[in-house]
Image 1 (spheres, protein in one colour):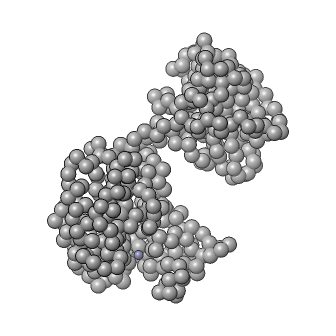
Image 2: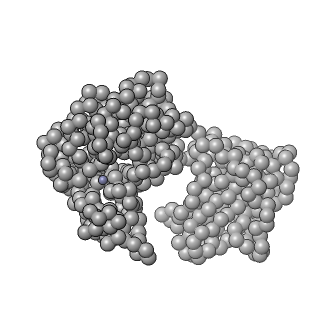
Image 3: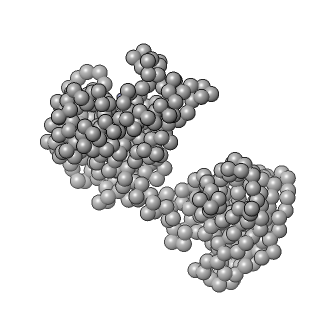
Length: 413
Ligand SMILES: [Zn+2]
């Protein structure tokens, strides 16, 4: 293929972003055809969890998740151990429960004065303590006060990567919406407050999660009939009765169980679902621009799960990828495509800031036969780059350009 590298300034005219994307995310397949997932989580190992919560959950045969702080667990150690053995999930909530120094009670352990090293040591210390005393190693974590950072100002850093490294999932606090199972960051999952709420208020969240096939993680503290930071027994009872009705379509399970299912399902579906997402280099330094990670922009551009490829149906369709390059570098672009003999022969452009690779879509044999070809070399700058694949000429709305499975950017050293 006679691809050429053309350096041009002012490449990005006003033609893009006129159309909305046609990418469609399928419904997330919750187990047994359920419509949504629900997890009940409680923080701080408060005594009322043991006194009021566990007996109620056991009555309904429901397993909940408890985020524990060792010094609180010590007060009811035997009961917590029994709850763990009974199948309730025991999560990590740090050793010291550090929050912002804006809380007077946290001033001597303010997150503003923490570092990542200090936090990592504390997370591990809490997990070791819980494993030793309860016989189960925590797989999940909840951020004290919903504050996922250490340090302040120029020195502030997120500790979400530490949680992602040591746990299956981390839960935030006081968030506004349930979790989209395709998009939600398992290291920082939304947690919605259930303290001091009646069932009607919780039902609003359930209905919204159900409508969108989402995962609702409810978060509370004490469990009782009244009081500050208290999840009401009456609400929990009504909620569990509601969940028990099969037709309500709710999968109620501990946070770790749902997180594991979400992670496995995403992995199994990753090459059949189009979710535009930032591309980072693989272990060989290559950028693999799959159709699944591209953003279709145009009147009829379509991601076709059966072919794991984008199909082009008009001259105004294009696909964009966003990537983050660790360094400036030169790359060989390799296109994997298919096209019928009748539709072959149109010209394409693959471009990124000031550079264009052009070529002719050669016949691949048939729409079902995918082939690969080098289409030229280009430079990526360090940091953010956007790449666009599109027809060189507008061929109108008759015919097709190609089916594009992926473009690999192979580093040239
Ligand atoms: Zn807490």
